[in-house]
Length: 85
Image (cartoon, rainbow, N blue to C red; front, side):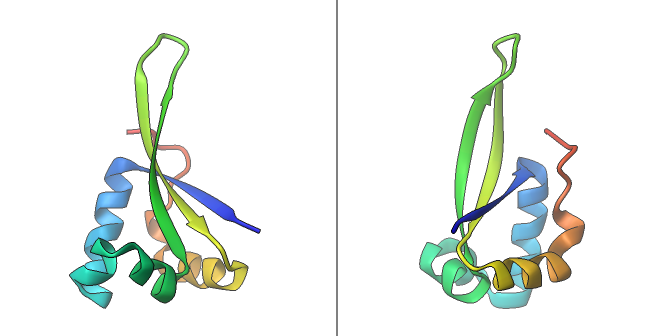
């Protein structure tokens, strides 16, 4: 079963920088490397608010609950569900 985390674009940028420090640039640039090493794939999600403004968020789709837990323990500071910028 797939589990999804939602991040703001800014938080994803900060998280990418940290992942690059920890694993190297190729891990972030190649989707199967992210899935193999950290257990998730990345997708951009666009939605619209009630006023018609476009809202873009980043979704991290985890395929392994244990890898998601390890990810949250290590990078939980970058996950902020209340920020939409």
